[in-house]
Image (cartoon, rainbow, N blue to C red; front, side, top):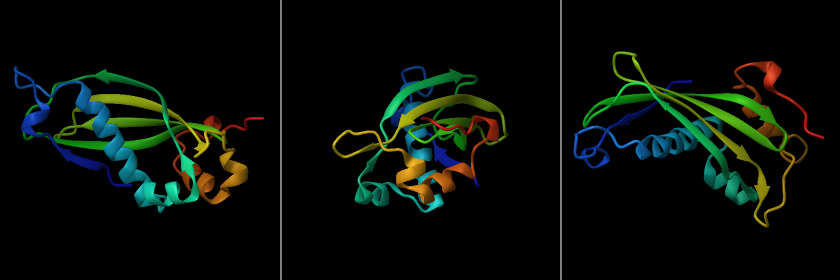
Amino acid sequence: MEPYHHKVQYYETDKMGITHHSNYIRWMEEARVDFLARLGWDYAKLEELGIVSPVMSVACKYRSPTTFDDDVYISISVKELRPVRMTIGYNMRDREGKLVCDAVSEHCFLDTSGRIIKLSRDYPDFYAALSEYVEDKENEKNDT
């Protein structure tokens, strides 16, 4: 899948002209929303089905700074997929391909009342679509 493209905006930079670290988390969400839409499972569809997927944790490693007007290309992989949660990996590179940030976010699957959804059982088509992007099939596991 083609990486998600983000152009760094002036307002995303700090007094030193460097992209503020909090923006990388926002870009992760932008890339995740784009990824799901490309899979045919955009947020509107998920919400219509009553599926929510809150962020449980986020971790970023900042490798090289970005500045205003830089292009950032974000590739996504599913690091781990379980019936009730998944971990997404983000690889962010500049125009030349230099790594600027790598990150992960962990999500669970709930219905709108807050009850856990077992994706493989309740939404097998969505689970199968995500399974196609599991980076290492050993990390696709069954929760009991």
